Image (cartoon, rainbow, N blue to C red; front, side, top):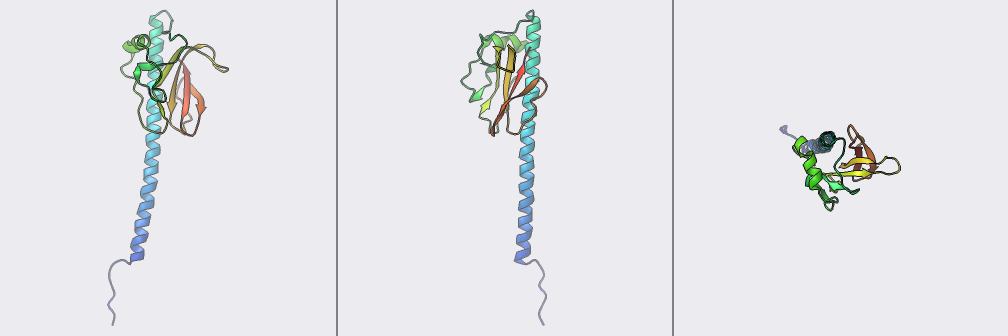
Length: 165
């Protein structure tokens, strides 16, 4: 008489391992998506604070926004990647400093650009001349937060622009 063996067969064990691997992959993808959304939400919250700081600085200065001479400037020297070449402006930074503590842009993701840019007199075909801020969100973003809209979008980023005044 043959004894009945206790335990699992090799096939059963491999099926269980495959199912665990599949579930782990699904969890990791969900976690990465949540991280991207959290970084984008952080950027949108930061830009709202920066816009408020610019408005408060303008109110203090009789409605005049700090001038950049028509060029884009990095806000609080926080630009990196493709935007690292944009200069910071001590005038711009000192005008908003009393109204905001930090303006760091969370790193990570595949954007290739980071930080916040400000221009005191920018315009294009769809935006009237005025003070604007621009920032980058990670791919798949559809919401630039209050005061902003998507200016351009690629597989690597979504560029937002919002009127500071």
